[in-house]
Length: 334
Image 1 (spheres, rainbow, N blue to C red):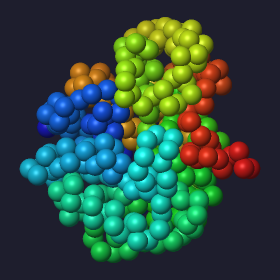
Image 2 (cartoon, one colour):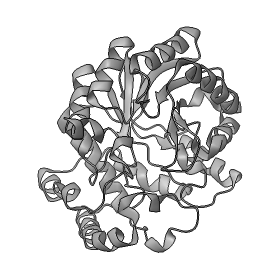
Image 3 (cartoon, rainbow, N blue to C red):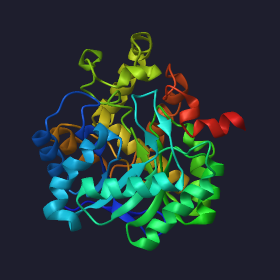
């Protein structure tokens, strides 16, 4: 098994500096059979992406079940993260639950699907607006005491929610969308994480493949979840096409692919902000894993960072179908 650099997030949690996003093990970005999904996951782990991230909702448990085929023989090879809190339905039509009974029920269901007696990192996938975060994190802390969970995390929490949660139990990582075209987290969430010593796990670091060389609107077929997001409407894809061309030209100038530039930008930006990160790109295809790996040690020079600085302000369409579904709501309220 190949080793890559490791990083310490919060609460002493050490993970590979690049992780693997397990949502792609389901059909969210296009059909994939279980054997192909497992082969891609295994390839990622074999090549050092030993931080594996999933959630109970991905493929209605399918992602966790596929991962169980790896954990059956190689549980000690991976740092395993999963999530709870998004309850049923399609993208944009789901509920959120954070009550203690739900927390306790969902960890047992996830452990059964994953084929393990514990997860290394357990996230609240979305903060329940109707349940105080102190209650939810208190129930999660009980899972740590019971040995079912090693570390706690939050996904798309606001800065205030992160602080309140951390006061109940140390939070190892906050997971939020963060990329060269999605930088709202830098306003308040990242500073709060730095203040508290919490690590960061950027999801969609390639902006759902939009920043990758091979992206084409023609790839978005029936069942693909991306059209639910404003940036992937036909109108915004057309509006943003020149920006994407400009971005890919900058990548070529750096002798990097679009995906590599996206990851290198994140590592460079995180270093500047003083926060440890472990991005979790996902793909159904092993060849993409091979493409990402060279980006882990790359840091961009000041000129490249300046050239990329305004991309987030220029892209048309919000990163989410609903600001209230993301950590952006804290900054809107402020």
